[in-house]
Length: 98
Image (cartoon, rainbow, N blue to C red):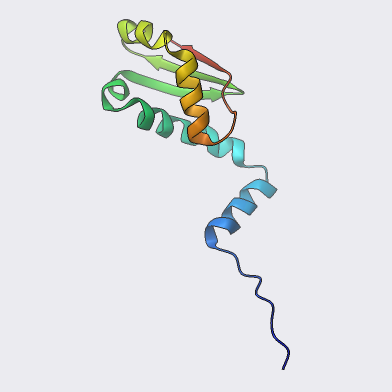
């Protein structure tokens, strides 16, 4: 009786393959960007965040506090780096705080 080759993969790998093959990564990234922003920035900043959007390679964050917007503007490069690290790829090149 010949041995069968095992061609099994995990569900996670199967979903990742499906997303890659159907070029859905960018759409998922756009959805996940708000979650990652809130996770990295924490509850205090999340409370003042009214909108987070990814347009191309630009992250646009709307804040209800002008003081917080000014404070975050000093750390734009660090925020971009942290977000890219969390996604595991160079996805964001520019941060716009509104």
